[in-house]
Amino acid sequence: MDGWPGAPSLMLLRLESGELRIVDQAGDVTQVRPWASISKMAVALAFAVEVEWDRHYFDEEFGPAGATLANLLSHTSGLGLEVGDRVVPRATQRVYSNAGFDHAVSVAVGERDPATWLEDRVFVALGLTSAQLQGRPCADVVGSTQDLATLAVAWLAPNLVGRATRDLMIQPYLADLSGIVPGFGRFSPCAWGLGPEVRGSKRHWMGDWPEASFGHFGQSGSLMLLNADEQIGLVATSSEPFGAWAHDLWPTWTSAMRRRILDS
View (tube, rainbow, N blue to C red):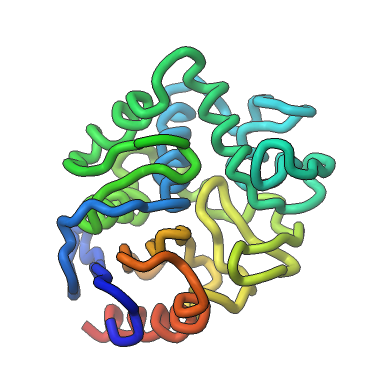
């Protein structure tokens, strides 16, 4: 992990005939750390479970202004980053929205506790031992790198939901829309699925991973990057928040880690 400040932790993953092989790991993979916006990968998977159980649907109107669940998960609802930020017409821009994720969970859980909802739908089902929601669904899950790797595998080889549902979620939704990836600038188009960011044609933190690659990173310096076709992935957590170091390092580092996994 040359170039990473502080005390990072990583796991490089590869699935072979459905069996997980840990290609490499570094740092303390059991230490509990903030996942920040990677929390959205857990929330999106929880909504996939809701869809599989026929409790909600991606094209169901969740509001506001006619926004569907798919709009909220793909940052096309028109809501701004936070409550009170500028609102744009639905499905016209990809505006990264913490408020949109929190709103979706609020509609789904009603009077129930979002932390219990997420635990029931995802954490217990996957056997995660450290992950828990400690605040806002959009950004306040904490957990170990080891638990983050287990969540990653659930996206690579879906075991909570059907493959067709997973495949739908990792395809660009309203693929032609432009938008901003926080920390990396504006892209046109700005590919995004129903929860995960999709690399598409963007040149940024996902380096030279194929266009179908998907994942998320967080302001805590954490990241998850996956490719379902190659059945590979990497996860990392950090003791240092996202900053200029990550902006400069990650494009070449993620590329090098992909080569390391494929060559293993």
